[in-house]
Image (cartoon, rainbow, N blue to C red):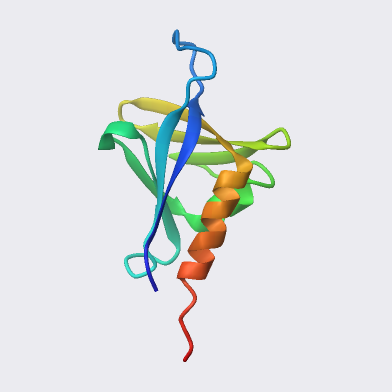
Length: 116
């Protein structure tokens, strides 16, 4: 079983003046040996990283899911929103759903033991 790390381009949803279409690199991580039920989402700069249930991410791609520090919901047919709360505020990140689905697929493959 090996760890999965995937970078995804995402939009920060904000009312701050940012250039239209500007994206940021967000890192998605999964380590089945450390915690087989959780995924991590890290924003640029390494200052903030959230760990939450892989099932929450999967559920949130179909319907609004989550309470507390992390919420996930579909946004139209091709995007999903991940709302991340921290002591310094809230980050709302919009992803392409297919990037999150690709990541989830990789996590399930990584968690499958190799049979010889």
